[in-house]
Amino acid sequence: MTTAAVNETATQQEGLPRLLPHQGVPEDLPTHLARYGRTPHHDQRHLIHAVEQAGLTGRGGAAFPVARKLAIVAGARGRTVIVANGAESEPASRKDALLLQAAPNLVLDGLQLAAEAIGASEAHLYLHAGVSPRLARALDQRAAAGLDRLPVKITEAPPRFLAGQESALVNRLGGGPAVPTFVPPRVSERGLRGAPTLVQNVETLAHLALIARYGPRWFRAVGTASEPGSMLATVHTADRTQVVETEIGIPLRTLIRQQDAQAVLIGGYHGTWLPIDTIKTLTLDNQALNKHGAAIGAGVIAALPAGRCGLAETARVARYLAAESAGQCGPCLNGLPRIAAALAKLAQRQSHSQLLADLQRWAGPQSVVAGRGACHHPDGTVRFVRSALTVFAPEISLHAQGRCSATDRRPFLPLPDGMPVTESDWT
Image 1 (cartoon, helix red, strand yellow):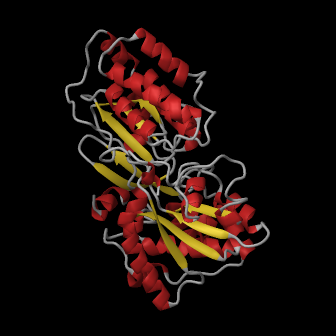
Image 2 (cartoon, rainbow, N blue to C red):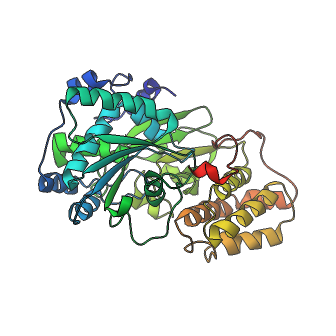
Image 3 (tube, rainbow, N blue to C red):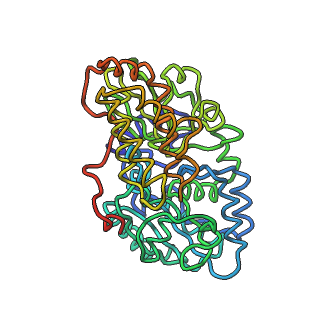
């Protein structure tokens, strides 16, 4: 996937792209400075107030108000730490990797501004291995130009689904394995080596850098009143995967122009399957999506082609999610593998009634797995599976008869090569 391909779609919306280069060429430091100028400086109160007025929410999945998170850490006693989280561990998402490739200095501007807002004495950039060299070069160039107040340390994340979760990230930065821990306390209260720690997704920081330059009113010129701004989304269709920058609240049908799709996955592998007919009226914002039990989440939109088996796709991903658990609690250690095994048997057209009853007990509305984990991994997996049981109910019935509607057996949803096999995969 190239940056040029990204902008071909993104520029169809007025006023965009904001985050990505206009010409589809990654921006080095001189190009970045020519476009945006040097990083503006604000006092702590002014920047947090501007972010609050802008209504910026986190773009990493939870959509938490950024100003509130800034204020919590800024108001803490003693030293504080900031981390830019670029460890995009969602296999179906490409947005953060592309942003770091195309506009690394916008992210680094946001990191410095957020550090200034909370009075941080320590700054970190948390990335996967393939992205690190480019960002290290960008940091060297910025240091030579005297742009940054605070030095930034890069730490590489292991290629695990949960490695980018906040508490897992803090564990990894502290020298331990990248596995989640029980909360409370939250990392914003007690994080890296006991210090209140602000963790923000890299796209969130890029938006913050733009708000600091152009203000809340500019930021709100796109999006909805309750969810302003633009966002990066990874869109999967039968013929291509593409990252687009789109305003929040845009009709989903403008992003999915695939005539033969049968269902759409919103939010990634902790997201929700929806019937394809919903995109005729549904918009890309949490207020609208929540009414259907869905959320923007990781910014993934996947339109399942009509010739694929939605049950088989769900079973593949469920097996991956079960293997990716940290194995620290009962729901992950026992519940997720059982869910994955039952789905695999249904996908293989094995016995039906008891398997379906078990899945309803484990992943249905009264799930015995959700809400009981050390982190939200069981909850997200159950949400994904539960939606599949509803949307692909006709396919499940076909499989009970020993049949399958699929005409194309190739996998559609992307998964990493191989599965984790040892504890060392977390470090």
